Length: 190
Image (tube, rainbow, N blue to C red; front, side, top):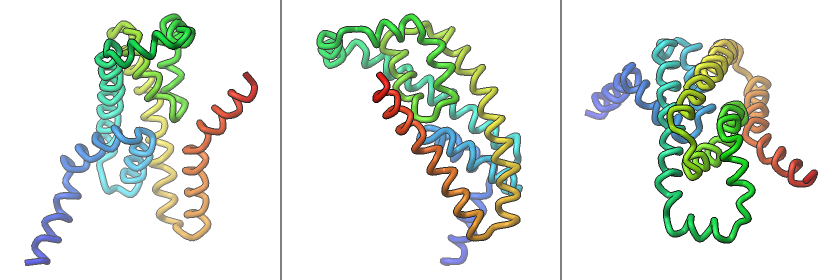
């Protein structure tokens, strides 16, 4: 019975539908990491490349619009009103004036999407324009990251050794830490 259960789970995890849904869900947590994982899976031929890239594009766009919707919904809350009353409003004014540019830049700078897309909802950036920017930048960034990951992933698993694992861990750490280091440096310069 245990062998039957393991075989069933193995088959389910290799299902294109399961992998598509899993990749869409993964983008809600970390979009770029999900895209890299999709690229590596495609590079190893564990998933069809078109299915994988479609999943991360759908998940990324849905996740970004969900952040906007939550910001819009919470932007009128009592807590948000109190917060606005205490702030000087400069950040909110900048986001109103330059929000679409901030959304475009946020696509390419890891760690900035949550505050930018949420804030865009709070200041009620026009949804049609925001959606156009999100779709356009996603269609540029996500396939490029996917292709790079797919090519690197195939080579990584073909030549897997301690050095490649260390290199991959270093690159992942740099991607995760870069926004924090950039924010500290920017704050120090301000």
